Image 1 (cartoon, rainbow, N blue to C red):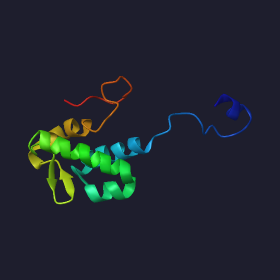
Image 2: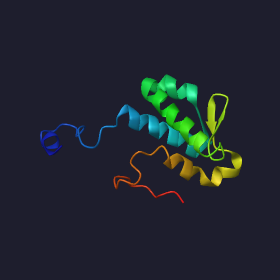
Image 3: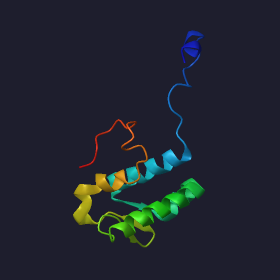
Image 4: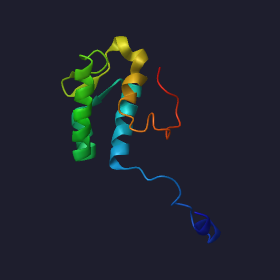
Length: 109
């Protein structure tokens, strides 16, 4: 980073590179937090095999709680309206960094 800046170049190598898994999980979390749902079809179209693996995770989340916090409605995974205030709890299930000390955001209730 410093060598690039001192040589008059842009500092483009600093930071952490996101994996496809990071991007897919971020996409799911954003959709849940902003729209209370995400499309299974769009997840796979955008992220391929990684998206398919995360669909298994989403299905597991939905089945584990009987669809109360996350339900499958057609091709969409949906947080039922009654649980919108708890959406951060649902989104946290997709955050692989939560609890390992690397996250920088506030924790869900």
